[in-house]
Amino acid sequence: MKYLPIVCVLMIISFFCGCQGKKNISPAVKTPVEINKTDFIEPADSSISVEQLNKMSLCNTLLDSLSIFYRDSFRTKDAVLLTRYQDDFTKAQDKICFRAGLSGGYKEYLWILKNIGNVKNKKILDSLKIKTY
Image 1: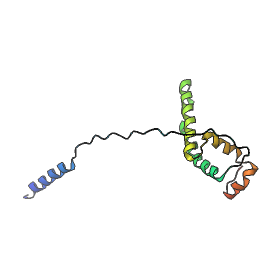
Image 2: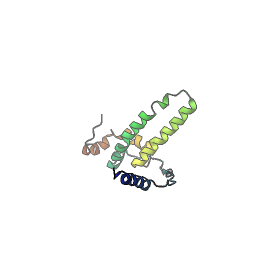
Image 3: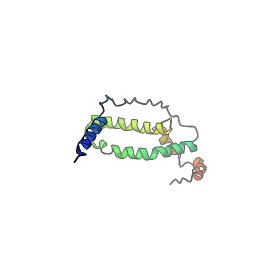
Image 4: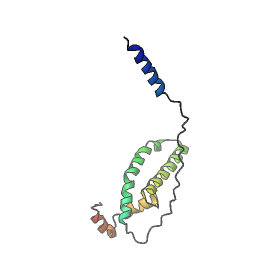
């Protein structure tokens, strides 16, 4: 019983020590990252580099996830909304490919997919143990 006042005083002191004035912290403002995408010009031959294949594989899963994310949005009957969603989707595809290292964006990604089965690229695909069907 004689320790009760001491315990109460310690609790009150610890309460006030734990309280701090509120700091006016505002969330950091995200600045949009500029994408310096270059127009992709298809090479004369359809040879794909190992670097391009590695960068394409980085994009693959994210692009699939993006399609799943936007799947329900494309079912809208509102033409204005549909156009906006398609625009956003296209920009997101470009951004994903660019950030993965494909400077030509989604256009370069499609070019790689189109030419991956070419006979000229068989040697590179075999060295990376990638099979095409």
